[in-house]
Length: 213
Image (spheres, rainbow, N blue to C red):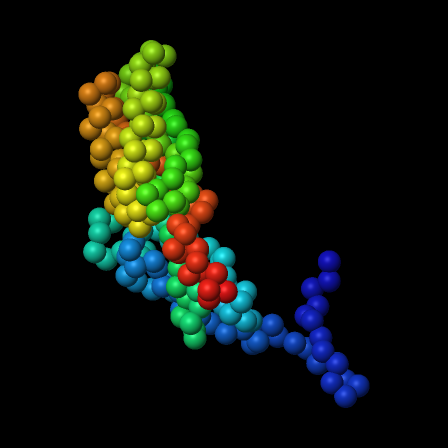
């Protein structure tokens, strides 16, 4: 593959074009219901190319006012651009795989649940939860644990708005409730909402995005 830079002809001469010089830099702000902070800058040749771009940051890198957790990454999707400022919406989160693997050992049981949920304001998310027990537990117990976490994750989504639900996944509130209920059934060493992905923003935010694009 050729490594030559793109060229542009000018009055019979060939001029080398540096694409980076044609790009502008835009400031990206995190969704303020997660944290009010800049996520840094991103380049683009025109604002329209920024829409839908996903910025992923460790919570350690974006939060000064909540508990630091370098194992948690949060994704923000650019949904509007005003001047050189990009606004974002929460797009999902994930706990580092290394953190999960460190708890999976011989004679322990891993119980997972992946489900789609709908919030009170009709946002849709795919949520993955995980429970790890300090000793092996039987199939019937696993079924009870899985049903418990599925029911709680779904119920909280129905009760809460998209903003509330996203914030409570990130700050660990939903995981804490899961742990409290699951521990009544069987001992645990780890209970987490391991991963989430926004499939559809709530109608109010979808309309806002459509209006600016």
